[in-house]
Amino acid sequence: MIEKWSKNQGLELCNVISYINDEGAKEADQNHFLCLLEKMSSTLSDKKEAAKQLRLLTKKHPCFRVLFCDFENAIPQLLKPICEGDSINHDLQEDVITTLLNISIHDNNKKLVAETPMVIPILMNALRCGTIETRANAAATLFTLSALDSNKELIGKSNALKPLIDLLEEGNPLVMKDVASAIFTLCMMHDNKARAVKDGAVRVIMTKMENRVHVDELLAILALLSTHQKAVLEMAELGAVPCLLSIMRESSCERNK
Image (cartoon, rainbow, N blue to C red; front, side, top):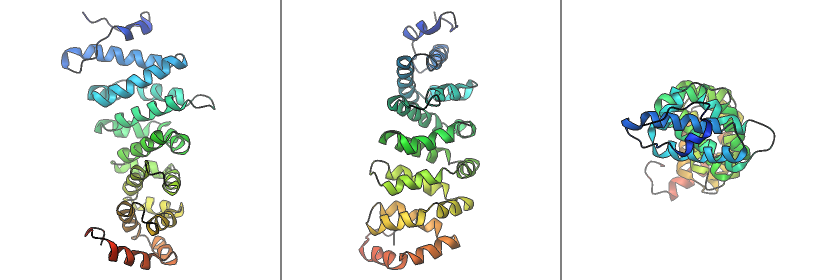
């Protein structure tokens, strides 16, 4: 017999609920999910425990990704612990941001996640001051969300390209691919090309390419930006032509050429 979740039962249910991922355990999944969300408003140790469980469950069991779409205010409840106060617990932040990434994989969640007011500011903050894994997963979340054109526009208007470009310039090898993927996808929208150029993308990309850092990914972004007139002028000023010619001579990759 599966017990129903209630406030009177509180957090004790978390210890007794099974969350096997099949149709017969659906009610148990919901109960466990609600219990974990309640813990996100409890003590720091409870928040950290709940965040770790939600990270694991949303990675391994797609039904838990769907639950964030099914329950109103589930996403704000998840994010609340890393919105409160000035100090950030980096372990908690990492688990919450990674859970948000897992949630965003589900197609029906992409619009809901991006349009939750606190999401993009939290991701931008994570890009600036999280652990390396947090920053990589924040970039990956923006990449995942930007699959929708409406989200590309929303993310661009929120000025999220600037922290992505700053992180690209910083050059940590563990985040470069996620950051480059996010910038590339966002720049498929014309208005975001202008924003990326304004935020210094061309200079950063040219510097990295001259040092032969992630040439494949950065060439793809540069190709997108080259349809924007200001980007072309800046490329010329920064010596893009000799750089590109040298890459053509060195590269064995037909796509790059």
